Amino acid sequence: MESEENLSFARSDEPESEVLYIVGTPIGNLNDISKRSANILSKVSFIACEDTRHTKRMLSALKINNRLISFHKHNAKSKTEFIISKLKEGESVGLVSDAGMPLISDPGEYLVKKARCNNLEVICSPGPCAALTGLVSSGLVSNNFLFIGFISRKKNEREKCLRTIAKNINTTIVYESPKRLKSFLKELEDFCDDDRVIHIAKELTKKHEQHWQDTLKNINQLMSLKEPKGEYTIIIEGKKTKERNEQEIYEGLKMDLKNLIELGLKRSSAASFLANKSGLSKNIIYNLEY
Ligand code: SAM
Image 1 (tube, protein in one colour):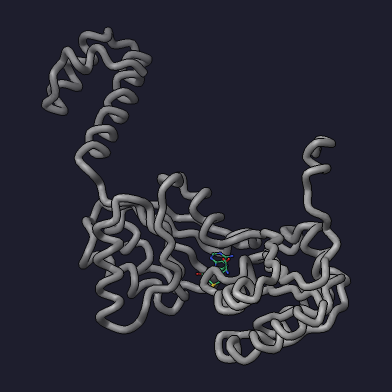
Image 2 (cartoon, protein in one colour; image 1 turned 90 degrees about the horizontal axis):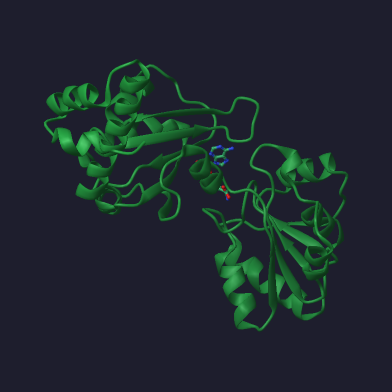
């Protein structure tokens, strides 16, 4: 429930003249469109979209009827001139991609840059993004991350990128097509340690949403048995630092200590057992707080 204060701070949902609206659309679940985005899409002068047939289907499911023009990576430059001229004439324009947030591995960067150079207002009505949806579902570190999107297929750039992922101590997010998912994971094995945790998020927000999380080695074994179909976002754990390794060891010991005590062992016996197993001091383990 929104507070009155929140409502009074909200920008109007009504499209304004000379404004370019970047509108986020669902990545699989139509109900993820916001009321604000739907209102903007129904009232802007026209909508620039990647594939007019695809966007038309989405709009008709939302009972929205508006003019569409095609705007994709191959015509983005020429269409930008047209859109800027229409904005200058006082029109309002909505930009959508086939799914998710425009500009995120999708066209729009050049248009936004040009709109800003021309002192036109650019406003985003946000929506879902596969990268963030996958990241927050993974449980991997989410306060620092690197978004790569699709990795270049050119050999040198690709290798450079794989090296960057291997060295990155923060989480990395990658988009990959089902056709290349298995080969990408195999390639990753040549650059990263086998125990790097990989999270694969398939068909986010859709009926057949699925998640797998395991070490790189195990994920590769698992994937070798599958024929990937659908859309995939890959979340890669950051390279383990000495501190993170130690922290993980202590977290594990705390859990073991708790479990052994709950099973009836005295703290001292549980600590002796874990000290023998881990090679760490009994005293330190005895004093761990769980
Ligand atoms: N702009 C979009 C966004 O905000 O997420 C991304 C567009 S990019 C062209 C498409 C890629 O995003 C797919 O190949 C896949 O890697 C990822 N993706 C899109 N939808 C997805 C979904 N529902 N589940 C998992 N990954 C998805």
